[in-house]
Image (cartoon, rainbow, N blue to C red; front, side):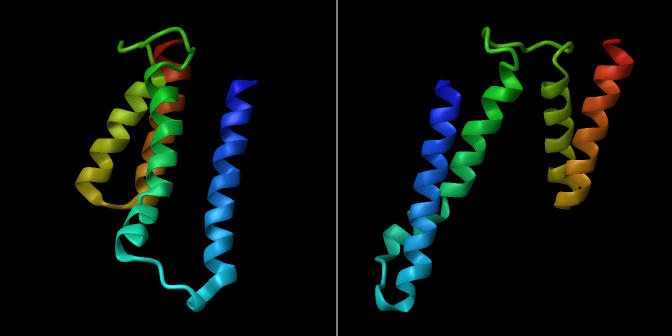
Length: 107
């Protein structure tokens, strides 16, 4: 239940910020420091969602072992992204490794 409340809260805050920007348009100029801070919101929210799911997928503490398919896929996706800077390839490689690891190695 806490996760649902947290996700709904993050969605509401994100929607409110984005809606305010679209509704107000050019009538209000945000200070540069606020514009810069708002540019980090999507990255911060996505990181806050993905990192716990990768490092503690069962919610019972860190699982830093080779038996954690989310961690293995995330490490490979990070390497692919660093080498290629190609988003679709990164997503595809991460998903392929996740499913191959879960169905092939851990089965």
